[in-house]
Length: 185
Image 1 (cartoon, one colour):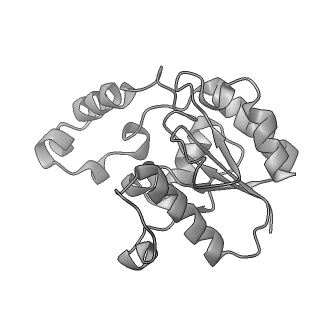
Image 2 (spheres, one colour; image 1 turned 180 degrees about the horizontal axis):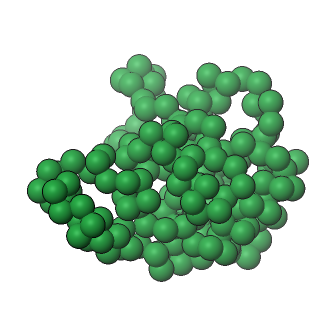
């Protein structure tokens, strides 16, 4: 199996400089579709997918594409964006943003069974996301090379992890691309 990138969006591909753009796009959608206004119908899913999310940063896309060219990795979405569109819609979104490859899968949602035997003092968001990644890996044991990229700090929970600390820079941060590639080669 090809190497896998577990990809978050906000703070990695969609940087803090782009946050809030979805609200301007949703206002535009409502003007173009007054009879299907999300505000009137309260049905987020009727809105075309490109209006549901903030944009990916163009330089972040170039860096991701360079990583994909160098490693031939596949993308699995670990971002919460997976709850707001189908995998096919996400693939279309990646194409619209200019990413060379669309995602092949989403990390699975967790069940109560996934938490059995774990001593989590509180439901840590980072721990939950790491568990979703570990569950996906358990379901796909042929994957031996992988990396998780996120602005949440999952360092205590995952070995193959690259933390994008600066939400204005995400995957563009100095040294991040090289770290990602080192896990995938």
